[in-house]
Length: 160
Image (cartoon, rainbow, N blue to C red; front, side, top):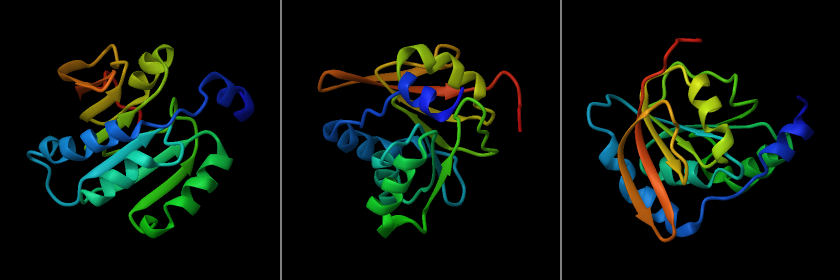
């Protein structure tokens, strides 16, 4: 599948501002037992709104999106934070981080199982509106017409 087809299948939809505010208050509570600088992985990052929130909470962030043009826009928009955010043009179905303390998804329901299969490191998954079906849900928060799921990522296989 080329980039154009993938973008048509999963078009960009930004995380609403009220959800970002809630995420900002939630992130510190997810870090028990994390040593050093925590790693935030924003899969399908778009303009990296959630990564900005994470960086302000002390995270190092990795943003991955299949659309190269939106990565360019995100770099420009977030240039103030670019020393703490790395951007990758890539397909989240095959991208693998060796470490991620918190993973954030705001994707369509049909791709959640696929991205769950691709995740190769344990951590906490936070997803908006749709849980990753193969992970245990630890909590679900109603946030102004949305549901924010917090799940334990237990990858079934290590692809790294």
